Length: 465
Image 1 (spheres, rainbow, N blue to C red):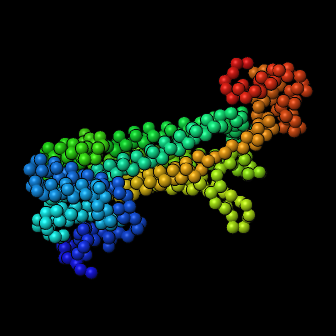
Image 2: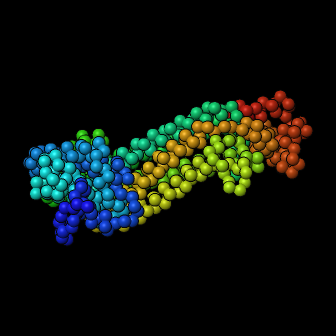
Image 3: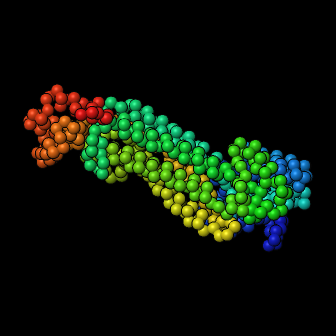
């Protein structure tokens, strides 16, 4: 393999001649082989890094801190990367020491070498355009990296929101389809009062629909950035006007409503927005897991369980039991949700572990938030397209459970009184007779009145005695 020699603080190393990255990226590759997941696994992060570097170059050009030809070459290189070029050259592991310095330098080196090629120079000829002096001008890892990370999370949230909207619509469609099907509601795994299967699915849809607004709220917090604070928020090595100008350029490049934090020292060490976003993901995961639990329960059996709905059969369920089909899609959603809940704890611990003016654990936070967003989006799409859209109702089973339940006695309380209702319920439970049969035997209500009270419309909507 042909190589070129590069040097840094620690000395010289041969770097593959065809590599667009440089020596500091290579050292990071040697040091960090933890997850096997390179930063290129998340294109949102690569594009966001390039956006930050492009905004910085434009601001430095405007302020006379960077020669125009260099700024234009850096800007053009960043534009290529934003469009998808050279993502395979972003090779460092997501989990790394150094508070993200390896990720920042990977971006600086790739952008520098791509800019050099646009200026007619070979890779590694940094005397013409330098990763630190030029690409990283007026920046520190401590403002460039978290700013890019915040943008990346905002971008990652968009397909997640689309997946949520798709699943919510499918649940709402099922609510309409099942609106006429009467069944028993349940609390604490015991019969409660009647409802429709449509009401059950409508509640699923409404519950999930609340999450898009929570994601939007969290993204607004993430759009407040510390770009221009450099090392610890004091803005050392940057022009006094750089921060405002760079953030304005970043808003233009990214299309996102980014704004400059009021106090850059505070913003450099604060992980609050990341913790909030993680909490939103956990909240969503909890709801999705509960939904999956309910789908598994409602479809259980199919003959010895509740069996009120039929999930689409996706694959044979057993290597030993012929004919068995398992609820594999909700099970996979459950497991995804558990992983996201665990990741939230990791984010919480990493956020708490910061000291003084910086949090060195940011890479773990970023890894978990990007990974959780992607996993949830994929799992929600799976649950939607491979399960919910093709759910069928078992109307006969819903009716059988309803008419065999003592839960309908609640509808009779306003008409026969609580004591009579309690006694009838106990008799029904011990004798096996239905509630309606016992009410008829004791002539507590006329047949016409009993039929009216136990009609579907009366049992599933508010009524006056």
